[in-house]
Length: 321
Picture 1 (cartoon, rainbow, N blue to C red):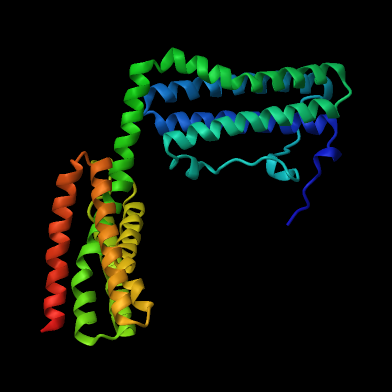
Picture 2: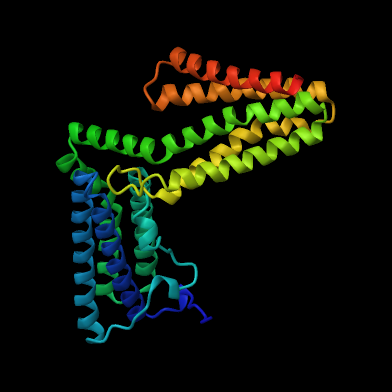
């Protein structure tokens, strides 16, 4: 692995070359954000397209200054070549980010770029280069204001509300729905085998093993079922494997919630704690349905509690037979 250079060891020529590479990278990142968001968030995509154009203008000014001072050959010096320098997310990660995460990432990029130009200006003695770097530091400091101005231009109140609502719908489709389906299945479907084993054996360890096996088995089954249900290309539900992982994990968690109390050796205490956990699980499911699925809370609670109670009763009756 090659040794990275310290920023303090860079010459003015190398600092300018690094700034050129950084501006090109940031411009391409903004363009990638715009491309990734264009279908669902066209107004925000326009904002980032204009920010990409601003970064390209910075790069042009840097190249003009470099060629005037040092000639036509610009050495390749990148962020990852300099010790302690800021890094950016790779392209494939950028495309998977939600709109709010992208906005926060852009704010971070602007702050990091401003600090870089401030430090770079301090390291140079050439008056022209120092002035340019200082101007770019001010430009990066004003990028947040630029984003706000572009937002006012392209993201009026109605557009912002529409994009926020679109983001909410995508979150519900891609995360909440598969997670809720898994949590409901894990919390409800594992009740019968767990409590059947509990009341049939009165052995807390054996009951825990049954609950553990039922939870993991249900998680694997639900995860694959969700991942294979559709590829998300038409429904907008996102990556099938992300949905599958979310669904599988939530299924397992839902089942383990009332299985873990049976690690308590005393059967009566373990069962009482398991009852309380089941009540909490059903309340959480009801709240999620109320919060994200536009279901009245009392209606959601009634549906979930009735279903859970029937499965719960079936397990106790079978285990007590």
